[in-house]
Image 1 (cartoon, rainbow, N blue to C red):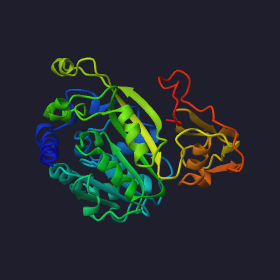
Image 2 (image 1 turned 90 degrees about the vertical axis):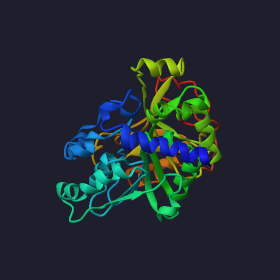
Image 3 (image 1 turned 180 degrees about the vertical axis):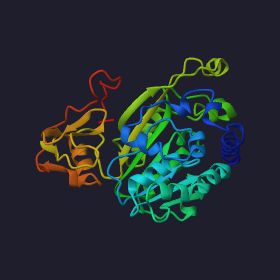
Image 4 (image 1 turned 60 degrees about the horizontal axis):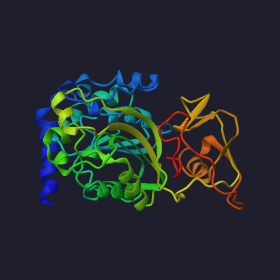
Length: 349
């Protein structure tokens, strides 16, 4: 327990005292330059400069179809993503941000009214809470109360990752979604990495080995996590490069749904058709790195994909034909041609 407290204090110090702005980072791990979709870039342009100056995310966490939803951002910092989500959920939705660094939250709280006015909201639909992502219950976040949980390059910083993911799936409603970006490693890292305040603060020391992450989510009842995007981490600081050696780091944006899914892609002859009705996606909708649904074009899918499309907030935008009455064996499902996971043997992750 003491080790966990020490780790959290190191993180709090790094983000509250050592880092004053994004440019202070020594690697691209917590600031991967993933291109923002034009619609999201337009919202970011409305956000207060002080909030943007201390943004340390590694991906884009702005899933579609959020109007009126309740969204929880874990490790929200000054609130860049919170305020993007604030506009996406609209005045009937709600966004909750949680962070353990008071100085970061203070920045966001100073600009609650600024963003409410910029987005045309009568009052702010944002709540910023000071606390730990490992213990959402103590913050009053009830079981099954959240539609979407997001996080941007934060979970790697936690010394109790299993507890974080357990809390996420506790607070999500049935059919709810975890949509997050984080840094992952191609191997298990020495404990000394997590004890180094710079490696930890730069989102490298606590990076999970991708296979251990897969095993953990399966253990928690989530056997099918989908990849949305990936980007290699550039380590330009020579001291850090010498410390990490041959370990490779990747920023992944992932999504997972709270529903009963199988650990392999199974074929029941189901067909999904995107209706082209999702705001901002008139021509196609991308579920993951190997499912791009062209509007009005039928697409054969595995049972897991059919469930994701029919038992989540996406349901009204898809027509699913078929059920689970007849099984045809494994479904030939995998990432798009040319991705490093094209020979995967698990579910569609």
